[in-house]
Image (cartoon, rainbow, N blue to C red; front, side, top):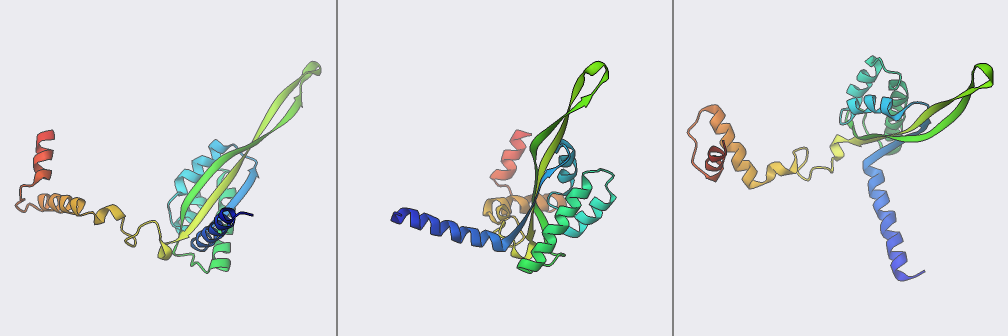
Length: 180
């Protein structure tokens, strides 16, 4: 094995270790349901906290909520057991549904005919992260773009306008006045 391949393999191992300590993935494959129906549930829970999601899934009237509930519960159990995450601090950072294989069957009909029946399957992926180990934002829980000095100045001006204080004339205000 060449030096480059050894180096590349070692960097892959290190990147896997860092990913494994900050998030937990759970997969459900070949769930007997169309991906469209499962996405209807997944879109409601993406980005929410773990406890809030459990309440939502229990109250949803869709059939797809039960496999998602089981998968989420499994992901939280592995997160607390393997990585020591607290369930109260965990949230769903990524949730996606992909189409699986289509199981094809034939239904017998009158006069010796048969109609095809397609039973779609889907693969569900849920990724849990801990809010205390949040690496998405470099400045803690604040979005990084709020630390930009230009955006800070703009937000400060907007706040002063709302509060009714006198506003200093800058290029922001002149630019927005000319546009509107």
